[in-house]
Image (cartoon, rainbow, N blue to C red; front, side, top):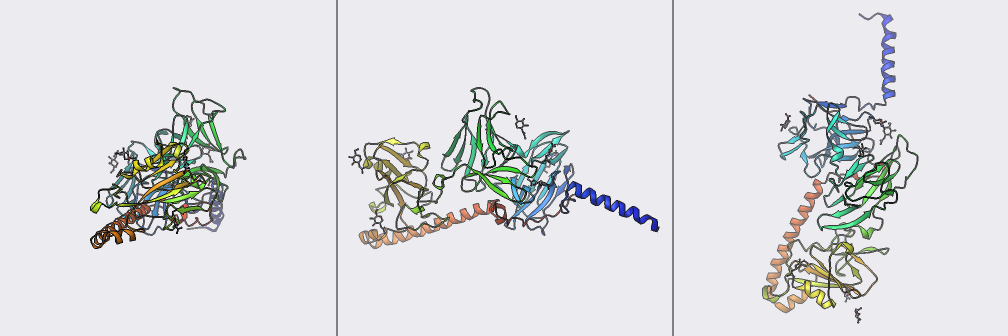
Length: 489
Ligand SMILES: *[C@@H]1O[C@H](CO)[C@@H](O)[C@H](O)[C@H]1NC(C)=O
Ligand SMILES: *[C@@H]1O[C@H](CO)[C@@H](O)[C@H](O)[C@H]1NC(C)=O
Ligand SMILES: *[C@@H]1O[C@H](CO)[C@@H](O)[C@H](O)[C@H]1NC(C)=O
Ligand SMILES: *[C@@H]1O[C@H](CO)[C@@H](O)[C@H](O)[C@H]1NC(C)=O
Ligand SMILES: *[C@@H]1O[C@H](CO)[C@@H](O)[C@H](O)[C@H]1NC(C)=O
Ligand SMILES: *[C@@H]1O[C@H](CO)[C@@H](O)[C@H](O)[C@H]1NC(C)=O
Ligand SMILES: *[C@@H]1O[C@H](CO)[C@@H](O)[C@H](O)[C@H]1NC(C)=O
């Protein structure tokens, strides 16, 4: 039975709890979320979750580990910056789990994500005591406070402030096309599909030199506002790429990260307490990006940017100029059915190959000789010739965006698979039999195109960074995150 004299005590306790809560700055949603996971823990996604279901948070409440829901059905185990709903790390970026009751996150010494439906089985393969999320967003599996595994050692597309990036790691863009890697004395951005180094930053070595045999270099985003490259001396960087916020006073609210984005650019962002501000970008000229205008297109620096190599096609933003050539297009030159060429040729002057410094070339004495090397070669998609140097570049992969130059002595020769445009002459010349063949071919190409589109869509679906709120950095629209506590056991 409660006596009246007991009420003041209750109120005092309530007040104390309230004060505690405000001092610790716990958000009301975060209070029920675990700060560490011990053996026996498990959680499953709940059907009522809209976009994110937190499982564990860091001591500051700024970061959260949980289930990210993408396209309704897909689940990624992710570390989010809570206030902005930005995913800073994803456990399973290449393979989604399904958002279903049979998908499990558990801790049994390893942190394990399993999904019998998609057969996903991701594990830290450790034998630790607990899993914790540190206040720098690093997820660790620890055994007596020693880290056995940490998410900082396997980044996805993002490197946060203080995280060491070594030559054993890569940042990979969410669409899987591009990567950031370290070389002996440089960092580079690679188009993994085209085996192309499209951006390279060599260490300037103004403060310290990089010495042979002293071990590999590593990189780190420094809270002072730069991306540093280091070798032996952790205090003196061998190279500094300054951000806009360079040497601005570091406050407790600020936070930095760099991210390799789906367009192939590496960008840096600065958290000012309420928004992510663009702070750095590796590539500032659009035409220097790996595929700025898509396939069969031309990018002209400083000009109207994107146009088409073939003036009979129109540039479609996001789609490039022509998708009819699929990877198995037949470019074998003469000697095909009825002696026809299986492709048509478009020539353009004033074009350069993109990133030619990292392309190999042969030297020929004339444009004709250069084109001949490509014409009869089934795996050649095009050739570019510079009359002044005699350099001949052969393109052995589907044609992406070429670079427009004002220099008319640079000529490009491009193969287009037949299937659209330029068909009339063939029809007139070869007659009804060929019309039928062409129709069949068109059918095949269209079907092939359908497969391409489907594949592409599939890839887009697997792209965990594609749902609206998570990629709109800098906009105020990404507060749509919904927190709900996990079902632990
Ligand atoms: C933890 O669970 C996974 C998946 O069920 C299993 O493969 C692994 O052997 C378990 N590890 C330990 C230490 O029990
Ligand atoms: C993060 O934690 C470390 C110790 O674990 C502490 O020194 C540091 O001040 C914390 N940083 C923030 C931003 O809370
Ligand atoms: C990064 O590397 C430096 C030098 O080896 C080390 O002192 C520091 O603790 C590392 N930071 C993290 C977060 O691992
Ligand atoms: C972390 O939380 C503090 C206190 O709420 C806030 O001032 C700061 O901006 C947060 N940092 C980040 C990176 O969100
Ligand atoms: C397209 O380019 C070709 C060759 O440069 C030129 O002869 C033709 O007139 C152009 N057609 C159009 C529609 O601009
Ligand atoms: C055809 O072109 C490819 C790519 O440019 C090249 O590797 C190959 O050697 C060429 N084949 C012939 C027979 O010239
Ligand atoms: C190419 O170079 C040769 C000799 O250098 C010159 O005679 C010719 O006019 C040039 N052709 C073009 C299209 O610039």
